[in-house]
Length: 397
Image 1 (cartoon, rainbow, N blue to C red):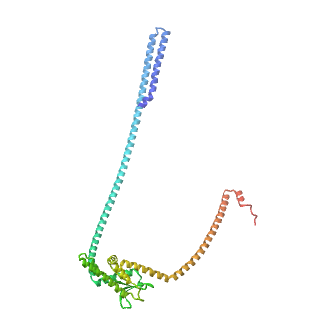
Image 2 (cartoon, helix red, strand yellow):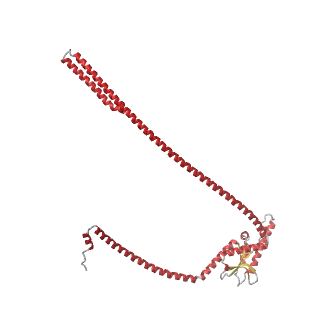
């Protein structure tokens, strides 16, 4: 509406200016007529001027009415355009709201799906954790049963080790297991009878100059337990300690006298103690007993130190076998050297063939490029250039 008024404003101003100008013209004409005709015509001119004035006012009124009608029509058109724009905006807004609603609903559904998925994963992990905990509890129950069984076995082992013969059998079984696991079958022998009619628990068959090494299992346990018993009096524990040292010395003397035979066995033997605690007690608190055993060429070993000795013996046996097979290795290396020399010659020949083939390929590529150039000249119908490229024509044979 304001836009239409602003557009029709200059036209109305011009009309008013025209009206005023006509009035001035009429007034001038009236004065001239008054001067020329006189007072008699003044009344007629006034009537005529009044009539013209009324006619001009009527025309002005009609023009203003028409302009007002035009302004109303423009206003109605503007209202219709505005209403159509508002309707279109409303439709667009409705569509946008609907699309936004669908988008929000889709995202909410996606979010709900993700939440449900994570909840399902959380429940599954919780169930897995619970199942794992239950399995571990079952494992713990099983371990507890095994511990109870182990306690029973320990009690049975204590009862077993309480008997001297049983202790001896236990030491022999442990010695046999260690030796069988570390050495090849032809490198040892159990319960061997020596030339002096004595039976040794194990003999290690090592290469010269070592020869046969006797290993006897001993388990001095009674006095060991007594000297560590806190319930006994100090005098009784000191007496047990003295008896323990005497037991070890007696075992050392028996091994040195029975199992070290000049010309038959090596100049030393081993006393195997199945208990690491007894071995540690000897080396920590009774070094004089260890020194006495070494002076008698008897080496006191525990399961751990015996494994080290057996590992060294296995390395020696392997080295000896390797030396026995050194000529076979040398022959194999000689044959390998000949084969490698032939391989080198054949590789060089292959390299020469590859170089020659590469040169032939380059020559073939050059000929191919020339032939392609000929075909291109022929296709372009440039026969002159083709003849120049090929050189002068040869006379027919």
